[in-house]
Image (cartoon, rainbow, N blue to C red; front, side, top):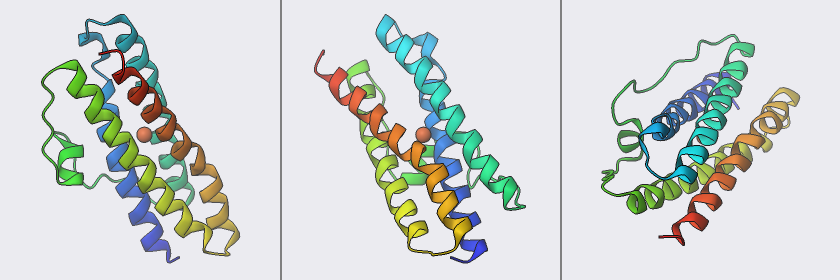
Length: 148
Ligand SMILES: [Fe+2]
């Protein structure tokens, strides 16, 4: 994989991760204790995802740069309208977004794995935990939906 393509792909994911952080960072606004706690934990996971991606970019000699800054990052990146009316809709929407995230990571990591270059393989392994955590968050959200 060409370095430019690699950096572009990682910056794209980084932008989406900033969108994910935006979903959970206002965890204090929620009434439900379990949502408050979980969204706080998810916020910390998203911060770790951002950190990992930035580490990779810096090690490639690149500057982390977002494709879109502020506002509705996820809606604009995915080309969807997000309507967050009630908690059930929020949980359902976030589950959908985390599923998208998992799919996106899976595609990107599969692409990296097709490259025999050692460095690319290393990046794939390093970012695989972000992919897994997106799935874990999605499963929690999906499971929590049953309580409404
Ligand atoms: Fe994430």
